[in-house]
Image (cartoon, rainbow, N blue to C red; front, side, top):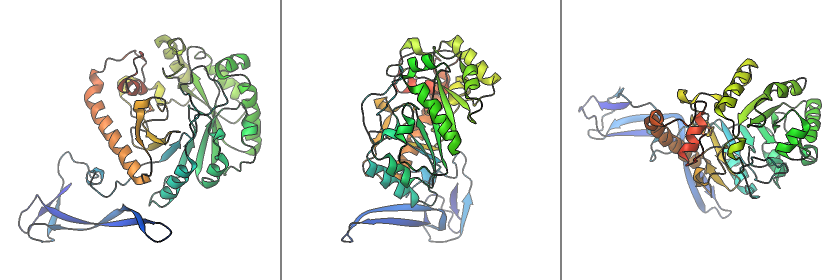
Length: 383
Ligand code: SF4
């Protein structure tokens, strides 16, 4: 897109007037502390020629420049965002003890930062209404302010990723919203073998949790993290969970932290697991998309924002244990600023991917698009 002046022929310099809302933040004495300009969707008021001031301007379809180019430039007031989901890792504390857990430490995302971002989100023209709490690195139900966090998200769609070990105790006193749902990590259909992978008491607690959730009418699903020790158990896991009104979503462990090479699936094991997933008609996550197709996940498609438990905007919820995957400290950055940084990082990543992907020597035939990310963040394992 671009412009041409039909009065003087100028095609280089224009003034475009856009409608902009400014959010004004003040202290209690009315001193202005911060101003955030916010672009309004379809907010263009007009265009004039900078040379002759004429308003007789024609729109030109410039080749190779998408319509949203202007809004993605760093000096423009702000991008019209496409974020659909915000992920808060919440905490690295965990009551399970998974043998391949990549995380360590007990960091906890500051409640004030969470509530500030949620308030700013609610002020946007197109606020995000879907949240995920948790992910691989910790149990969000152990955040010291979980009750308050659930309270401020009560009207939103929230998915809580947790384990069942102490679920009934962890939810005591919490009033979940009608659009809240749960995802449980459960890695083996056999009690002993599951607890060997995830820690004593997880299996029993998880089945108790399923009963409570079913009786209470909450939606839930199961993430089964495939490794060399359970990749042949998908069918039995599906049988175990039948009748609970839930479904199994297989994912794959990453070569991070405690996940030693012996835990990773071989090429042959993974190929067989992919066959089982197809036969059972299960949700085919990004981990089981062939690398050669160069798929882009929801992060790459700029649909997600993840904040880790240390207060950083991070690249992906699977990668928060990798120091280089931290994009920026959130500090007091406004949510629109974070969205914009997130957008630009992914734009740069995808530009590189477009030039490097074909030359990347795939570590194995069943590598997934996530393998390319790990490779990009310096992970050496053949994954
Ligand atoms: S590791 Fe990369 S490809 Fe995989 S989900 Fe994360 S951002 Fe997407």
